[in-house]
Length: 327
Image (cartoon, rainbow, N blue to C red):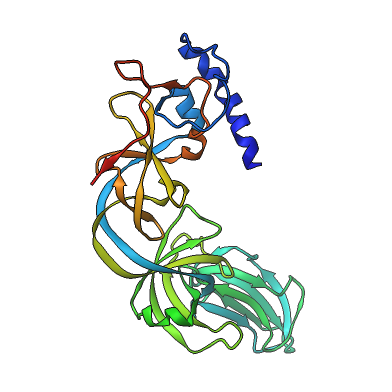
């Protein structure tokens, strides 16, 4: 599928080509979606179609991190099981799975089997704010003593439990800052803190369970969700950095697309030499400088823009080759 994308892209931007007809438009292969090696100038329509986004190259400290896989668990003490001490039947049920409730809100009523006129009724209220995780009764259903009727969970704070390899245990500290990305919400980053570790390693995997506490005010992190964690172990001196998404290519042939500020919608493929990496940024040793702008979204597609794009030429009519800054 990936190999078909350049063909699709050529068709998608074909309409934009009509805005910028020039003597070379009819040259053989002008519409071929091959990787562009030199600077190109796009139209506003092409930029919008590609969804290009740029960010400014920054000078900031890098962070040394190590990754770990994890799952979301409810925080101990924030799960409540509602049960009855007497037998009876459910006469009223006011909630359902997934419903948010407030502390003190009526959840259900149970009529006791004790013979009386009228029979005694028990009212069960929410002991805390939270979400109904599970209902095990229906209106009219029988209730037995010590049977779980409802489960309520407070998701305003959760634990994210990481599996840390033995070789990395020494880098884990109580109170350590951790960045959390749930697979369900890759665009969001949650900030957590190491609160405790297990007392032993897993015999099967040889990993240590590390409990990371994080706020979850919108309730997006749900029990059972998988997440990728980045444990921050050290902050380095300031370096020239770009987001990881800005860098394309393979080892020995890495590059970014630098925006040419002297021409509208113009971008230049610029080779870079990289240094440190963390879960968010890559250090740039050579290629771009602070203040430059690089493409972070749509840059993969930008490699194959052909139709409608103009090569940028100097005063002698020669195309600029790829290049960059050294520092």
